[in-house]
Image 1: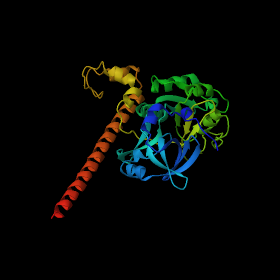
Image 2: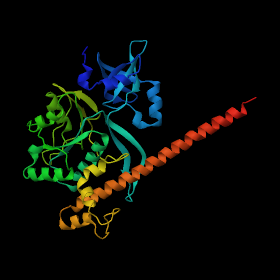
Image 3: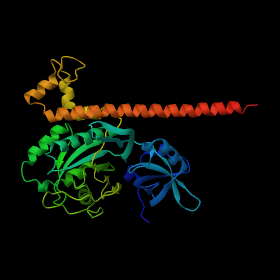
Image 4: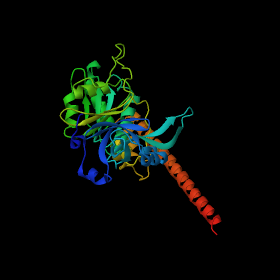
Length: 366
């Protein structure tokens, strides 16, 4: 049986202090329905969720174990383990349940889903032949905002760079402008170009999750980092360079020489969730311009003395970028209102149960 040095998987003294008595630590490598594959010091274990985990996740889906989580395993009499508790997360990439409806509004329940936990880096993968489209720059902005919000550090990877005929430097400059302050690398996993830059980010026991649309070459990149074919891939179509969706689950993979990476299925749409400063960090250029607006509460929507609109009219600020900022701000505000409404409803339900129990107890008194 393969054994693991948990410190190379990210185990720390602070996590050890949170470990319940009579349990052993492990890290979630893959999640199935009601169970998970966990890497412990003595190897891989397929474990079912214990009662404590089931109760916590019934009230809050974000509490469900996810890939990257550190968990406490409790030994069962028959020699197996159960997943007894999810240890506190250092970081968490959470997407909201938002979808677009036909009349242009938003729908969703305000609840989130954790895609990866305890990640140091979020690799946002965008194939080079698609990144020139405005919607794809918007997708990069969205994923980078969520990456900042997760507590991890975003890195944008323009993949399949070998398929981009010309103007790659201009493309990288456009992407860098859409993600100010974020490293942007061109990568060709098949040719090995840029892979060493990606691996450099993962030195030591750092963990990264790679996110992006189907066909972005995420699994091919993982195979290049692992230096063997651990993830299935599909050939791209010669006509447009698009790959077929291959990965169907999220999986944590230790890399030779240190570091870990989480491969994920392709993302079609990912909603914002409980944003604080993620959007502001992505649009730091707009936030800086706004400081020069005449009015402190300027909405950048026709007010006199608006420095943001002036920058757009002069060409300094692309109109696409301002529209993207408005869109994410509206969505963040909408999700916050939905979350508040859900929490109020849960609190009301809690007090209804308390009052019902009090009335029942009063009737039973002698």
